[in-house]
Image (cartoon, rainbow, N blue to C red; front, side):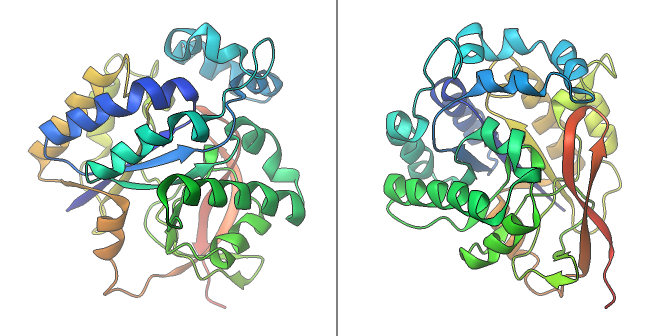
Length: 298
């Protein structure tokens, strides 16, 4: 019974301060995981453009954004210039890989992607994804084989590009089990390994003990197990104790804590079902997310 750990690294601060504590904890717990990096400039301050989107302010108040991200990060792109994460943190990223962890692409510009991708055209989408791919290759010396979209926000062009750019698998969606995505009746030859559990910031405030709430949801999984997404800015910093509680709980349930690659390779003997990709909202998160829809029988 496998539970894949996908670590989204959204910001400059999260890269510098959040990833190495996670590496140490995972090694202590004999757990594997995958780190997905934001590779361009940190423009977190632009996120305030989402202030009027449904659910955004509730998330801000529930997760104490200022406390977890810091004032300086919240000013990047507005009163402060956005630091180039890939240029300034390449050595840290390579250190994660040298410690034996899988690495992949999260995004080029995290907030720019989240604020715009849903309504953008093919040219804009390709520019953003190609920039991330080129920077990843310059940092690691090899192409990325995994893409995990910022905020699970995509468009049809982005799904086509996961195939065109040669990713082996992707985790751009929320859902219940791995699938082959179908977008507007077009089959995309890049399997999706969707996040199957809520994130910690989505359940904080809904339960006095968010870790226990997530552990309860982890019981009685499908045979394909679970994918859990965490954030270097949260579980890698002030909430690292909560994450350790989660790891201990999952191990006591009998889960093998694996990377996305290990998770994917455990599925290769199975024929994955085809599912439509739909777009919608989920509790605790703002914006239109890419979701696993009904099975496609066409």
